[in-house]
Amino acid sequence: MAFSGFFSLPSRRNAPQRNEERMKSAEKLDGGYILRTSRTDLTGDQIWRTYVLLTRVEKGFEYLKSDLGLRPGIFILVIKKTQLKIP
Image 1 (cartoon, rainbow, N blue to C red):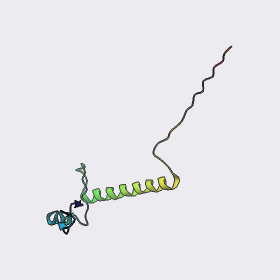
Image 2: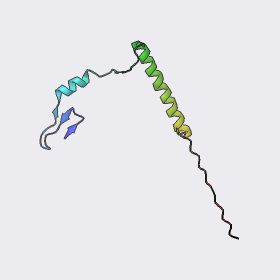
Image 3: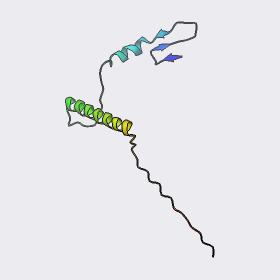
Image 4: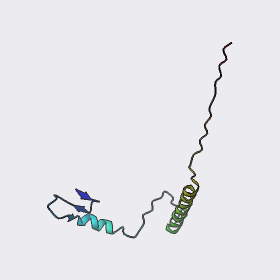
């Protein structure tokens, strides 16, 4: 059994064992972001500002959808009625 890859429990009787190598590699990324983009014309600061702007826009849409019950699609139901006349 494994707990997020940082601990393992070989059996129920043994104490959990730490995966030190995995923990050290994860600690290198603590407190930071890795942003990947194909835009080579932007500086690091511009990429960060664009990311922050995107998260603000997404948060705004989330706020609108939660309060008003908006959904991304519009569905129209058309019911055709058929009438039959027998002479």
